[in-house]
Image (tube, rainbow, N blue to C red; front, side, top):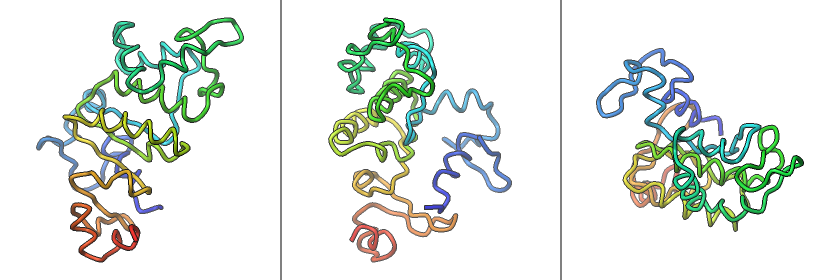
Length: 204
C-alpha cells in the first residue's frame, strides 16, 4: 500500500501530468496526444464500479455511445450481468435495462455494480485494459465468476493490472513490484519467486 501503483495509472491516463521522463505507448508519448484520443484507447475497471444515476442501459452504453441494444446485451451477458438486470425494478416501475440505479448505483450490491461496470468496458472494447484492484471488493464466489470474464476480456489486449491479491496476476507475462515509488523487481511469476526477494516473501 502507498507504493505508487494507482498514481502510475493516473499518470498513464493523464489525470496528472508528468514532471520528468516520458510515458510512451507504441513509441508515442502520451503527452503528445489529446486526453480524449488517449482515453478512447483505454478501458478501466476499478475496485468500486461507479455508476451514473440513470438507467442500466445508459450506464452500459456510456462505454461506447451509439452501440445497438444487441451489442449492449451481449456485453452484459459476457459480464454475467444480464440475468440479474432482468430482475431489477425501480420505484417508478421501470424494469430491466430501463431501471434506474440510484445515486452512484446505491440500489445495487457491490458485485452487481462491478458487473455493470465490466459490461461497459467490454462494450468499449479498447485495446488497452487497466485493472485497478478490479475484484478486491467482491466475495469469493462473485470474484471467481468475474475473474473468468476478465480473462476472456484480456484476449488480444495490453493489460495493466494492479493487485494486492497475487493470485490475480500469476498469469501475467510481466510482473513489476513497486516499493516507495520505485520499481524494485521485474519478471515473470517463476523468475520473481526464484529471486527470493519482496515478491517471493509476499507469495510465501
